[in-house]
Image (tube, rainbow, N blue to C red):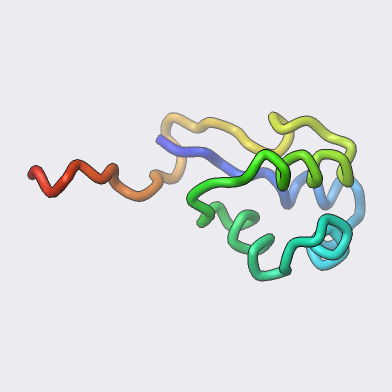
Length: 81
């Protein structure tokens, strides 16, 4: 199970580089890279809003739930095996 980030697809459709997007939304290129790669543990609504505004898209264009997709980190169950 996992959330798949489709930011690369949205950038390609708009012929925009991640560097341009990062500059437009006031996010570091490194933080945008973490989001693009799916390594982000979360995303702020303000950041998502800024990305959608710049790319003229909906959040669902950027994020997708894939039941058999890449798994996130295991849940923190307090050390219970």
